[in-house]
Length: 515
Image 1 (cartoon, one colour):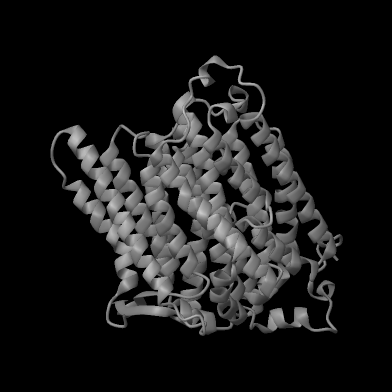
Image 2: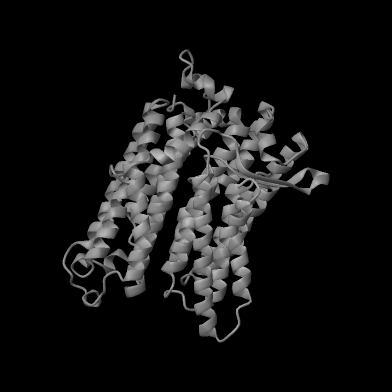
């Protein structure tokens, strides 16, 4: 294993598959059939290799593992540097897990430009995996920004009627924030003389510089999460994207912002992170309550789930900025759970949309009478989104609440209010779609899940229940890396008995209530 570049293989194998698909020749039907098969098998093999990374992962150390480090541009101390730790390894597996599900779920729903569609997903898989493996800032930025192009095309080419507007809005929002991210990278390079992430993690930046660097990073990560008020691109992108595009958006792309906070903002800029803690709490609480109320008013299923994603990611950012082991681990588990559950909910919407071609909640009702298997699947993920004990959604939310109650009771109470609202809009959605009388004529002939759709949902159900019933394997991998992340003087003083949280929160207009 020490001689085999497994991370490079996992990262670039999808790119090899994309190149192979590009060279396929024949009539349009032959190209489409072969492209689907090559894309699916390439993504399945990539997923299998990522499982090998987890199987050989050493949970006793916080060091980066499976490291590959080669001089890339030695004149500027820029290297080809890959590695994973306990924080990034599960995001790697989540990415490789969802891509074959996306390709298999769109096996029959995408019929135009199939080759280009599969190539776009494989290229995006390489870029997403690269984000979680990169240990050089320049490499990270290339992967981080490179994702914009294939996602832009997936929304703009295979999306709905408003796909062009949604695609450009998504692209511009993320690009503007990333310009400041690039400036932060340049400042760090000029300060330290390298873009090597492990080296930067050990460097102590001056407090004044930390503040400006933190704000620059925040501009990019907040858009990706997305945090309120930078979330407005998300509902449009979700509504117009094809089902598989929504799955990747919710399952992986929204996790990039949270991962950026964990990988860069907290360990590299700890003093600034503590300084801006009430700012993050304020935005997160607003996001949880406001977007939950907006979700209650939605008539479009995709928009409702999109706004619920903003609320759930608000819980994640609260957990990360509690600076407690329980809060951070809960935030990570919540991101993993949301990647599974929200992806499955969008797939549930895609199932009925493929049959009826409507996302309006009013177009449905009484589906349990014609689609009992679908009703059970939808119920499992609805309850997981609500946070029912025994599902993956409960574990993350519970740990975040434990962490935030140690820091600020009022923030915890407000976050719990959002969780209650989340139960309201998800159960309201389920009741309107599944229960009631089957009165609409076009629903009386609707068919239940076929074998391909059951095969798509089965691993998602298994993983959501496994994480909820037995989360220990996930937490064991996280413990050591989170403990090292917490080993910062700025965080340590928050836990000292003689120091209250209020004493380290600056006097700003929006912090009086939090104190």
